[in-house]
Image (cartoon, rainbow, N blue to C red; front, top):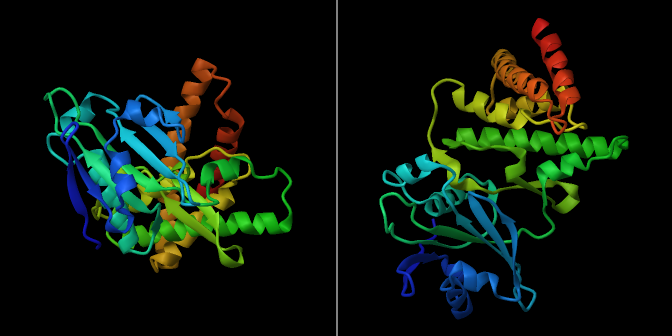
Length: 305
């Protein structure tokens, strides 16, 4: 593991951790800025601003990759309480990325992270993480949402290869003793490398834990998170390919793989039924009711076999 260099930011006593391979005077000056000063820069633009996070993209000169600055905000009061007992979200995201890299899974290149001390027991301390942009990468969920409705044979083969790679990555993660608390396709970036091989990059790594859950709990929970999506081009067979690749990566036998698939489908079935009931009651037009019903029918047919 690469050792970090620490400095103290005098402006607000924010402790900075800069990766040695990225340390330079320009970066240090950038990290000393507060959010308002950062957004005032002509090369900085907020790409996402929600109640729980601010994401800023920073262009750099001389052909260097752009930077992403993510500042964490509390999602709820529990986040503020949890800060008493564990490290900041930025520190956890940094460590989570290092842990994934240790088992040969890709993440965005780490640049720095910062933590400010808590000024009140009722407020979460400020923390942020800075990473390099992954060139030519797209969000995996967005890629599947834009997948052609009538794909060619080559496009179908590419989609199946990508989903199998997702299953293998999840299997490698669990074999390495890691568990991801938010393993969704929206938290994975996709890039095609040499010979059109898909390369997956994990982002939002603050919920990566060094934990082995008893039995198949980690497998079922993470596979359920991956399979609990409603994209027109992703069928039940595609979801089962993810489970099949996961089982292959972990060298599970045929019986164990089949049991895992049924357990995961049972969890997905319960979640989909609950969401479908709410969608019918609230009559929300944004909910993919037809996709949920189609998935339920496929799971019920599978469980009868």
